Length: 97
Image (cartoon, rainbow, N blue to C red; front, side, top):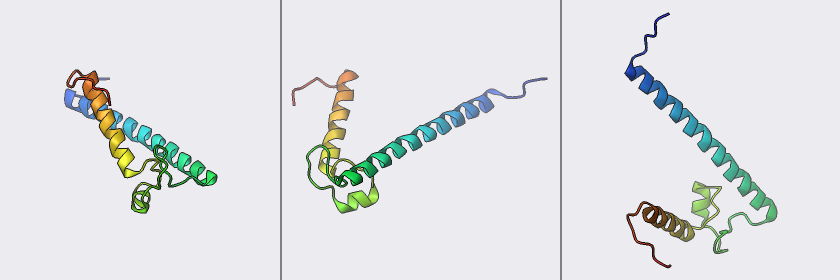
């Protein structure tokens, strides 16, 4: 039996497999976030920022019901992660915050 797949077909198959894997992993991650939100609801802590303790804005919770950080803390966390990645990549000097 002759293999009729060319390099383009193989690249497409590889891309599709990667895409499906990432979608699968993302779905499980979202499920974990939702389960954690449900636990917070059971504890009476749903809508409370786990970093600063302030209430998470209702609009944010409507958009992202599994949010555990208020918008300010989410933005700070993302900036810290970005800065950390730049330091690790050698693109930025490490500074004490």
